[in-house]
Image (tube, rainbow, N blue to C red; front, side):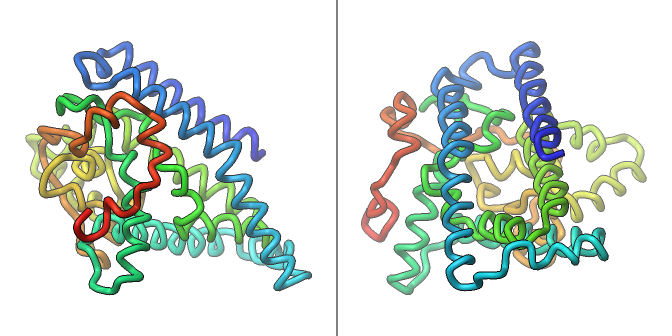
Length: 289
């Protein structure tokens, strides 16, 4: 079951990437050789280093502190699967959105929090670097899992996912993370089908889509998050836009694609994927950096 669900996500990303190539969505500087290399490096490191190490670390901590905790919550999904799934998903998405917003927020006054936020910003930066230094880059499905080397170790929703898995919520973990993975991948694809509905000639169609954008995150909303402009710190949730709307106050619904994607990058970052991925210069994101 686990392998089948993983395959579903991988197949979707591969097919979407092939569609982007076939439709010309990667030409003209929209996607560079370094973007492809970065996607391969980040995904490989996530699969063989970050995720396994985090699971081992969490298991060790829980075994040490709570020796009999493995599988202790399995009864929850057996007796209340759908309620457990809903609660799991809502908590996981809130933790993700909160940490993501923290990485995009203004610098806090507390010195310790400044260092923490600088570490978050440093590791999240690669996710917003697309194309070269010429500003022609656009969003692509292969950007879905791109972040810096420590992102998996510091994002609280990843800890929450793997703790729940260790505690026995196996099916809940699989269903929720695969759905979220698919939804996140689809919002990164270089398409904007939601614009057709947001700009539909029928008022009711426009209104329905506008309402749905307050509940779920659609491609153009996430594309706006990847823009270079006022919306780059908006739409921080991966799936549940209701958090952007009611909790974080970061909801942005636009009826056009962004004019420019991606943050400004140095020539070094544009040419060297190892400089993007293995960045360790935290001071650069501190005051005066």
